[in-house]
Length: 119
Image (cartoon, rainbow, N blue to C red; front, side, top):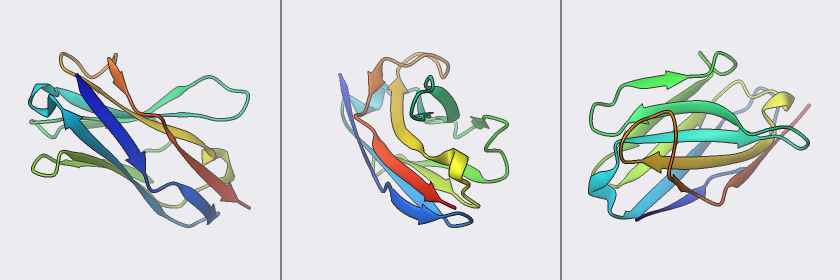
């Protein structure tokens, strides 16, 4: 089992930046990938970005490319989502997720952290 706890959400003005963190505990040695997803009010959850835990390769949704960067610190067992040039449409609850086999579908999920971008 892997437990995930997000932090770093909050209220920010459009154009601002935030860095989300996702602290992993438990069987962290089994993590293959960590991903970030978001769910805006009234919308379905959508993929944001993912990182292969040991390879450090990344991928991101087109809507955030060039603005958001995903990274991880294996020693700290923590993943990060650096968000810049934030837009009101980035407002959502952000969830981190982890899996031990792939970086498309995730077994373990955090409880989410809210991000509100004001115009």
